[in-house]
Image (cartoon, rainbow, N blue to C red; front, side):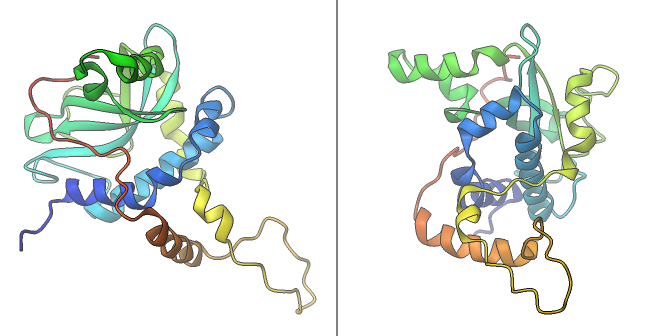
Length: 233
């Protein structure tokens, strides 16, 4: 039985456990306000990456022969608009950027798919949804020492500001909001903390049990390995 590479494992992980349960309208609204929900979602995608790849530092021997899909942030050069994204990079080629999937109010939209469709309402809708973000600059949550295409000196401050503190945020997914266990009664004479929650491990375990029962074979945001040419950015 062929073992799945880390890139395929990551895509499967987020398709099963994260992408179907993002509140996309709330995410889109977050981009125009304090970015708190967006940063929390980015943190979820980042933690999944670290869990699957085993590290936040990646190199040419990771993924599918150096091809990786990792979470990041993009910013339209003309509009200044920011959104979360899943970035396709070829680490065997010094981090060459091959594609982007944008997380917007409509859901997950692949740039390659939007511009490869032969017209039609669906293609028009996808292009309109991601139009504010192109051409764009990008950055990502991983550490990739061999990437010659991204540097902090050239990355817009707005993107660096997101990466600076996104780890302080944690956004509940829609399925988790429905299955949080009730807090036990206060029997020890201590004041109840209204912000206390069940341990993260328990919340994720319960949430995943429900997610597995609900999602079946759904694979939103499924990425295809397309290396016909680099991304248009």
